Image (cartoon, rainbow, N blue to C red; front, top):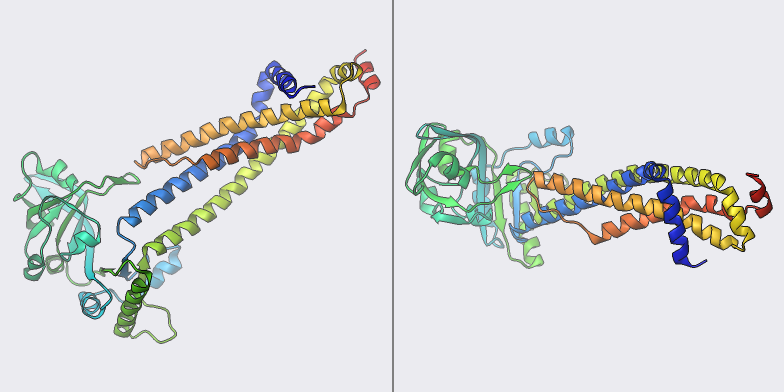
Length: 408
C-alpha cells in the first residue's frame, strides 16, 4: 500500500473518532507544551541576561560584601558576618591596582523623592563616584553627569532617571529644578537615558548623588560595591583581579588558606550562575514533561489496542484482499504517530504562547528556538511510534480467518 494511502486511511480513522482522538493526545500536549515553554523561557532569560551583562563590558568586575546571587539562608548569614566594604577599601584599590584602567564606588538604598508636593515611592538613591555612570553603563540624555568636583566638595547636585522626570517634575526643562530626598534638597544637573523595565521593574526610578554627599547624609556604615575596569585582554583582566584580591585580602587580614572575606564577581560569574540555575530548572521540567509524555504514550497505546479490537473485521477483510503485514503495521503506526504529532503541534503552540505571554508581562522580547520546536515534534512523533508498535504488531499478526469470523 502506498505511503500516501496509509496516511489518508489514518486521517479518516482519526476524524471518525474526533472526541477520542482529542482526549488521547492531551497527555502529549501537556508534555510537549512543558518542554517548549521551559526551553523558550530559558533561552529568553539567557539572551536577556547576557545582553544586560554585556552592557557593563567584559572588562568590568566588582568587589562587594555579598554575592549577587544567594542560594540559601546559610549563605546569607555567612555573608552578613563579613566586614563591610568601606571608602578606604575603594581608595586602596583605586591607588593600588596598576592593571585597572579606572575604579569607581557605588552605594544605594530605597527612599522617597518629593518635588512641589509630588512624590515617588521606592526610588533608588545612588551614591556615585564620578566615573560610575560609565562603569554602570548609564548614559546621560540631558544635562551632565556628576563630576570629580561634585564628589570632592560633596555638592548637592543630582542626576535622575526618567521616572522622576515623568512622574513628579512635570512639564518643562528638568535641569536646574530642585527636589528633596529624605528632606535633603538637591539640584538636578542631568537626566540618564531611559533603560526600560526588567521583569516588570522600572530601571528609571533613581536619583544619583555624589558618594560623599550620600555618606554625609546616611552615614558610613553601608557596604559599598567597588567597580573596576581592566583591559579587554584576558591576561590583563586576570592580573587586575589578582591585584585587587591581594589588596583586599591584606586589608582584611584573610589567612593564607582561608576563602575570600569578600565577593569578586565578573560577567562570567553571573552567566555561570545563571547557567547552573537554568540547567537544574530544565532538568526538573524535562523530567516532569517526560512523565507526561509516557502517560500520553500509554494512553495512545491503550486507545490503539481498542481500535484494533474494534476494527478486527476490517483487518480480516483487508488481509483477505491481499494486504500484507507490513501494510497493516504501517497504517496503525502512522495513526499513532499522527495522533502524537498532532498533540505535539498543539503543545508547541500552547508552550510558545504561554512563554510569550509571560515574557510580555515582564517586557522581555521572547526568544523562540527552531531547535526546540523540532525537538518537540520529534519527541511527540517518537512517543507515538514507540507506544504504537505493540498495537500495530498485534493488528498485523491477526489471522484473517479468525478476524473475519469475529463479527459474523
